[in-house]
Length: 257
Image 1 (spheres, rainbow, N blue to C red):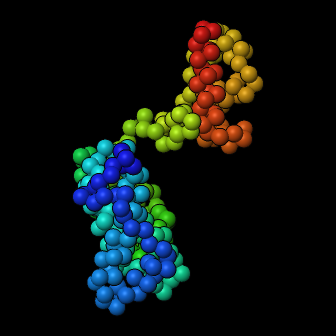
Image 2: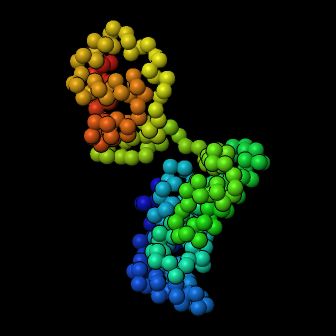
């Protein structure tokens, strides 16, 4: 959605400047001393970072210009709050800040109704995450946020999930050689073991036509409700290979039946 866009918010992305780590550090030092020109140069020199972050949200069909502007707010916050005393790269600190700002924007534009108590807890959690990120220079875990707020992990996790924008089960999460892996491929089905359709004689006969590896994948996927990732780790191949083998095996079984 964004990678082919040459201009965004009136800025030619092909001409965006890239700063070295040494240049960033020098500009940060000058910005801390009140040099507004150095601060501005630092912001414009890291716009590629914002552009790379908003590409992660391409599946949400949001306006690229809007996301870019929101991401720039996160970048500015990172510039103004970065701690030079810690041995951490600026980009390591800035990326979570940019992502957090975009997530807050998406959350506030979410059409799903959430109870006030759950929303308030989620807001406090997001604020705590930003504070911990500034203090520790990395994005904190859900346990660390819960400890800071003095709440239990599970209610906090449910509140954070409640404000996350929904995504389609058919949204691609990975591509390899044209074989897409979708969100639904990441989900396990614990009820699959209780279904009786796989026990049908015709299906059993069709499975006999498969190779040992294909049969194992089908059994793990539909008998045991394993995800493609779990199967890949179990038999020592990539998830993309599991996806191809599964699709090929199912197609042959359909022809046999």
